[in-house]
Image (cartoon, rainbow, N blue to C red):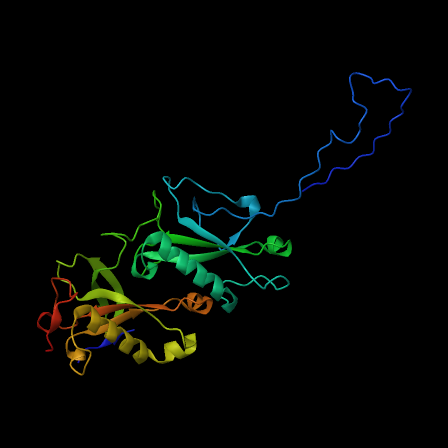
Length: 294
């Protein structure tokens, strides 16, 4: 049986002595209509649909910067939303449950921009918030930032020189496909990406949402994630989800980080794992003959 891995205000007073009715130097004698009213102060709000030279969880107006997406950048701001119902509340902390509605809005926008579920690719989604001073001044926005990452294991953002818009449409190199897992003993060390035509033991099969449990409950019951992934494996490979399935393949899964989980990201990535034989093709739709029970 297979194993599984877990503004400054200006004011002045003007004193004028009027002598007679003559106008001097062409002045019209009206001391009011030539003075324009000061515009109201504008709250700083970051731009959307622009690229960013650095990753930051807190955005300050004094250090705010953007770059052309054709130049090196580490993130792309895809959406700026507004918090509702937090008028007198303290600023949410990164990783707090208060960010769940914001993250759900970011997630939906990311899918629209990319053309697919970002969980299925070398991508990460982060939320940026106003500075403490900005929040105290009434700023209630949040920004959704997408970044390309190095790998499924190393989620460090890497430089890009083009926008991520439409990046998951077609045969995108960002999308997870086949891997050759590297183990230390019985523990997964990292997943080395390979072509599906090369010998490999793992393949990405999909993502499921774990909505009804806490982080502690999730980590305490790994078999639950295993079973959910096995159901995705059966559907991906077009084999029965029955008692023979563990003899056809095992599973590897990657949950969000605890911080992402608490913010509301519950997308668990699932991989088919063949621990006893190398595969040299994709297992998508192969059926029982292509993925036999042995």
